[in-house]
Amino acid sequence: MNEILAAVIAGLLGYLLGSVPFGLLLTRLTGAGDLRSIGSGNIGATNVLRTGRKGLAAATLLLDLAKGLAAVLIARAIWPGSEAYAAVGAVVGHCFPIWLRFRGGKGVATLAGVCFGLAWPIGLTYAVLWLGVLALARISSLGGMTAAVGAPVAALMFGYPDYVPALVVLAVLVVWMHRANIVRLRNGTEPRVGASKP
Image (cartoon, rainbow, N blue to C red; front, side, top):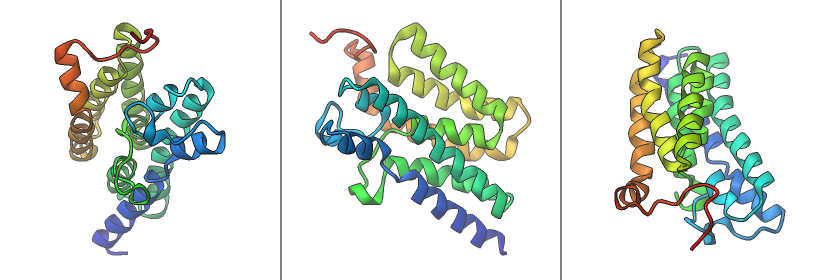
């Protein structure tokens, strides 16, 4: 198959997988309400946690991660060399799902799955940065952005230069999706995970 066509198909496959709104589906199926009317309105695990359902939040996290991982692995198996395009498609699909009028999540968990799919050292670095910063600062957004920015650096350090451009694009996307969080971080008003509400 033509490389350009393979890249386009892989990107579309990634987008369709990434756009499955697991957080919204799970909260609706369990009677937790419409996730878009809760907290930040995003469909990711952090907002699911605001429903008070920790199990649902964990399931959302794992499923959002799994769809990024699946997109990369399927693309690699069918169209070797196209996995970076599937990776970009998956995260873009999560952030801008066509089914929800392009209003989705912020891409952190899906990017984690993508990183593990591309190469386990990249995924491991992502996980360590994400969970490490989250544990130290207890700020979800800061952990996610740190991990996203660290992913292309890890790809370069561990010998995966072909994945650097896609990971740079995704890092920029994730940071941009957190622009409101960045304002709150600067103002010292970003909520901490586990903190009681005022």
